[in-house]
Length: 550
Image: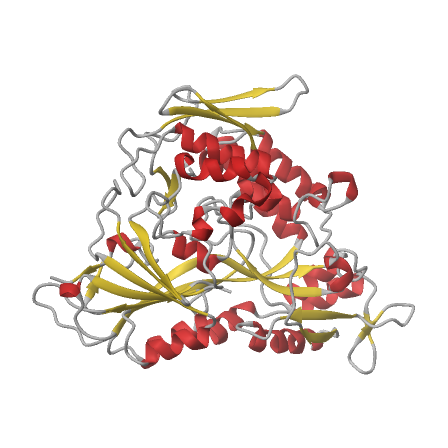
C-alpha cells in the first residue's frame, strides 16, 4: 500500500482567509495533514518500516544522511565520505573479504529539540542498541545489516566499518538516539528496551527529536507537531501541523471530498487520477515517476515457470503498452528491466514487445503444443496451467483478469486467486504460492536490498541462518554473477556503471520476475499553495518547504 497524504490549511497568513478545515487558527500558522498508517504510532527512529508511519516520522526525525531529488546529502554531517579525500577506504580482511571504513564528521551546533547538542555519543548508543539488542528487533533499512562496527573518534568524528565495498548511495548511518534520555532505560532492561523507551511511553517528552518539528500532543488517531526551534535546516512556514491517521484510502478520500484537504499525494493511481479529474478546479495535479515496479513474482519451484522460455513467452503474450494506456491513462511507463528511464543508472536492455507469434514459438520449443480446445499441453497431456495470486486492490483487481485473458489466447490457463493474506516474505512462501504473485516493489533501499531479493545465496535456509529475502527461490547463476560483480567493482564510477548496466541486461534476459510497468505518484496541491512539490521531479516536497502564495 502506498503512502497517501492529505493536508488541510486551517487558517491564513496575513492577507489570507480560509474556511476549509474549520476556519482561521492562530493567524493561519496551522495546517492539517492526514496519512494512511497503522495506529498507535511508533516514533522510535530504529523501529518500523511501514510507509505511512515512516512518512509521519519524517516530520520529527531526520537521518544523518538523507536523499533529496535522487541525490545523497549530509543532514547532520559535513560531507559524504569519499575515496578522493581518504575518508572512504576499501580494503581486504585476512580472510580475503572486502571491507569499507568511512569516516564522518558531525556538524557542530546540531541539536535535539530541547537544545542539547547531538554528538557521537548519541550515534554510539544507537549502534549499541542495534548490535546488542539483536537486529531482528529493528525493522529498519536493510543496509544496516552491512554495518560491522561503529567507532567514536571524538565528540564530532566517528567511523563506520561496513562489510563489502560500500560507497555512494550504499552508505548509511544508524539514526542517532538521545543517549542522555534513552541509555538509562536501555541499561535497566535491554530485553524490553523498545517497549519502555520514551518514544513509546512519553512521545511528547522534550529532547527526543531532531527534525523540523517535534511532537507536542497525541490523541486518538491523531497527533500534533510544532515547529522545532533548534532545527538547523530550512525553517518551516507553518508553526503547527495536525496529523490525522486514517485506516484506509476510503477514509482519506472522504476527507478530500468534504473540502478540508489542500494537498495530498498517493501511490494509488486510481484514486489520485479520479480526484484529479473531478476536482481539477481546485487542485493542480503533479505527476512524478514512481520507482516502484509493478511485476509478477515467480515461484522457481514451479517446473513450468522455472523455464525461462515460458517466462519470455508470457511477456511476449502481453500488450503492456495497452495495459499502461488503459489502467494508467498513459501516465506510466512499461518496465523493460529493473530500472525505469527516469532512474539513475538506467540502461537499454532486451525488450519484449507484444508478439503472440514469438510467444507461440517459445512455448512450442518448451514442449507445450496447442490442443483442439485452444489450451496447451505437454507430451504427458498435462495442461500449461498455473495460479496467479493477488490482493483485491488496485491495480490487481482490474489487471489480473486482463492478464489471464491475454494468456488464454496463447493457450495458457491461469487460475486467479484473490488472497487477502498475501505476504511474499514468509519462509514458506514457495509452499503457499505455487505460481505467480502480483507485487509492486521499489529500490529505495539500494542495490544491497536487491541482492537479498535476487541472489540465490539469499534464499532463506538453515545453511545461511534463514537470512535473505529471496523467498521465491530465484536461482539464476548469471544473475548471481552479475550481482557479485556489482559488489566487487567497488566505488569506481565507470566500473560500477558498467556492472549496473550488465545486471539490468542479465535481468532482462533471464526474467527472474515478470516486469509490467513503473507507475506514477500523483500529488494534488491547492492552487493557493506553493513549495509543495519539487520543481524537478514533481514529487511532494518535505513539509518544511510548504508555503502560502504571497
